Length: 111
Image (cartoon, rainbow, N blue to C red):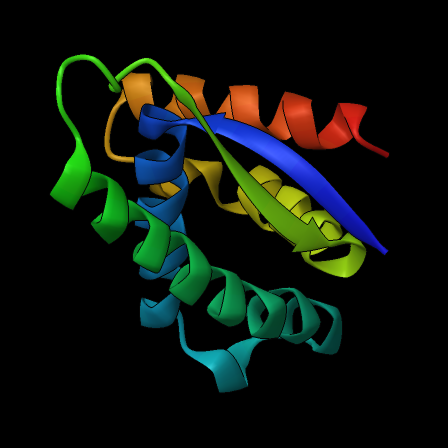
């Protein structure tokens, strides 16, 4: 089962930033449930990083406000939502936190 989601460019950049920062958290120090979230997060990190790089290469002023669709498996969307809720404090500024919160709201509405 797959879920099609539409994110803004800024939301993808914010999600990619947070997901890349989970690599710095020591995996062996986590409990079992958190390890499950993070193992899904590592896969998602690669997905969002690829999408972010694609967007940076072809971004111009006309496409900066377009929504970008990403198709995730149901368990990936569930894991992404839980990771973003738990790790929103890793966002670098309030603008990124706002974009992450928008993403969480969208993921929550796609149950």
